[in-house]
Amino acid sequence: MIEQIDLTMVSWARATFALTAMYHWIFVPLTLGLSFICAFFESIYVKTGDEHWKKLTRFWMTLFGINFAIGVATGIILEFEFGTNWSNYSWMVGDIFGAPLAIEGIAAFFLEATFFAVMFFGWNRVSKKAHLFATWMVAIGSNLSAVWILIANGWMQHPVGMTFNPDLARFEMTDFAALVFSPVAISHFVHVTGSAFLYASLFVVAVSSWYLLKKRHIKFAKRSLTVACTFGLLASLFVAYTGDEHAYHAANVQPMKLAAMEGLYDGEHSAGLVAAGLLNFSKKPGDDEDSFIFQVKVPMVLSLLANRDVNSFVPGINDLVFGNEAENIMGVKEKMVRGKLAVSGLGDYKAAKKAGDQAAATKALSLFEENSDYLGYGYLDYAEQAVPYVPLIFYSFRVMVGLGTFFILLFMVYLFLLYKDQLEKQPLLLKLGVFSFVLGLVAHEAGWIVTEVGRQPWAIQDLLPVTIARSNLDAGTVEVTFFMFLILFTALLIAELKIMAKQISIGPEGE
Amino acid sequence: MFKNAFSLYYDGFRSMVLGRTLWKIILIKLFIMFAILKVFFFPNFLETNFATDAERADHVLSNLTQSAADNH
Image 1 (cartoon, rainbow over the protein chains, first blue to last red):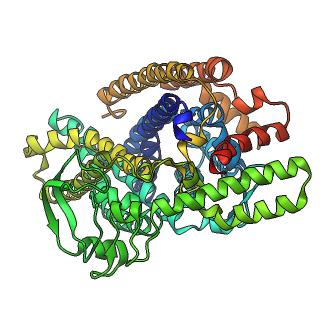
Image 2: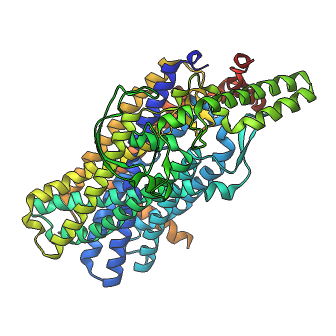
């Protein structure tokens, strides 16, 4: 089946989506996090009445506005791509995503559009408290917008609260609460927004560190750093906690992703966590080669993180592909048999309905429903296709976790030196602080790679592979749009960097 | 109330400095996205190629069941 599909088209469509999402994600977390940081600054201003905090708030609010203006609507391009490159997928999930995305649009429009004007135009026109309220509403509204998008993404990782309508070829929502309160979606949302707060804190650290290095706006920079490092430290710890929850859910609903994150081929009881390692790139599922050239393992930690039990069994890629009877794990091969029965039942149902044969339609539908949980496996040609590209996921995961740990240390050292009033005397640390913003972006993108590449080959986990989710287009069309987006987004990024750099160079008003 | 709200927006837009540049970028970006990209490069595949929802459903269902024959 998969050989008949233009895989080049699928690859270009995936590359275009990845490019768009990764560029979009440069702007979004800064908006989510900076909105709250501005609200913190302004709250201090309203509480203390100190005009310096007002100047500080206005400066960061300007940078927030620049980022928002450049980034706004870049996500709409993802929706264009759904309709053009991923039309099968788009049709099938329309009923599920319609409600969350409509709520997102309405909430974003009313909350952001209304309070944005007060936030930017309302200084000296509304009371201090009214202005502060508007700033908080922008922060809450921006983050609420993210809720719905991440719920939709969470559903793709773990589809719940729906049923498949075989007449319309659509997933239809049966339980809105199950969709919204899915533990996978919630852990996804809190982890992503927490990391956005962390990223925005690193942005404030980078700009303020640059001022300290240049010996400009010293009081301004120290005050900004105190708030941003406190927020960043709390966000980092929260991200570590929610990351653990995220991995726990992956162990339960996407065990292949967890196995790829760990480069674990043969499942183990009391499995250890690979702290560092060099993967053997020629390792394939089912062969006798070692999966690592070198590795340092922390004993039993993976079992603890995956199942909250140090003695528990964590399945490896081989267990998931070929099955493991002793551990009661159904392999991909068996799932493929059931998936093909589901596809066959669906085809027979369609044919029987067309022929007006109700008895045959009922029988075929029954066959489909018995096996529909494995529908996606019916489109695979061989079991190893269910394995994502392990090296990319393994190393991206370590980059993300390693940098996350580094950020915790960075914020702690900054806060300590701020407390001791010694930060200005540490030029190397300040340079590292400036560079940390780039590291924050790398950590963010690595996290998305783990999440999205880790669930391959699925567009919807277990139900729809990307090869079936695509439109019937030729690769050339999609390839052209990839390069168009590359040019458009690069231009936007250059514009943002230039405007942002100019504004940072000017510094806060009246300083 | 409405007069105050109007003057908030009116005066706000008039007194923008950096905001003018940002609005230009937003408008150029939206023009490129909706008037060029969407129209010429991102037609909705199912909307463009099929007239009714029934035809669209049938097309997607056909894609989903192509391999049914292989399974017999």
